[in-house]
Image 1 (tube, rainbow, N blue to C red):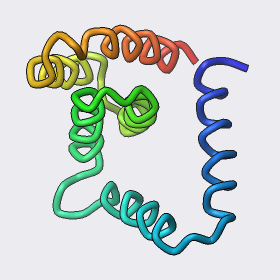
Image 2: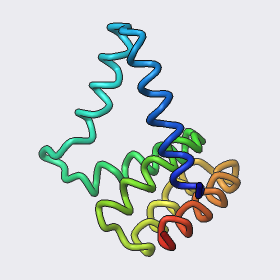
Image 3: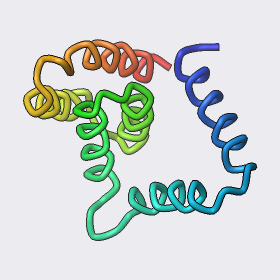
Image 4: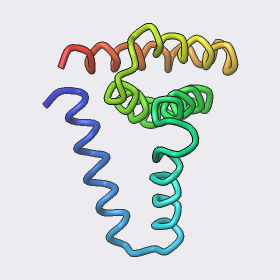
Amino acid sequence: MNLIEEFNEYRSRMNDKILAEDNKVIKRIFNLDTNAYAEGSIDIKSKEMIGLACSMVLRCDDCIKYHLGKCHEAGLTKEQIFEVFSIATLIGGTIVIPHLRRATEYLETLENQ
């Protein structure tokens, strides 16, 4: 199983387990997250770029992988993604660089699948 399949399978499996607990607050948070990234007055590409930048600044590798995958699915180019990386690194500072390294590796895997 490759890096992308492993991440997506784990995320899906654990989300199913979490949602199976039928906790109203957690279900509502998951629903809000889904709806926040749906098409609206801001297009999906822009929302995913915002999500990616925020994830990098917050230094959440799982979130970075998720939003990188969504950016790739939405058709963003490598050049566009690296512009997002540059903004996030500028805002977050040098502490973001280790996450930038892992994000670059994950992006390469997405491009080569």
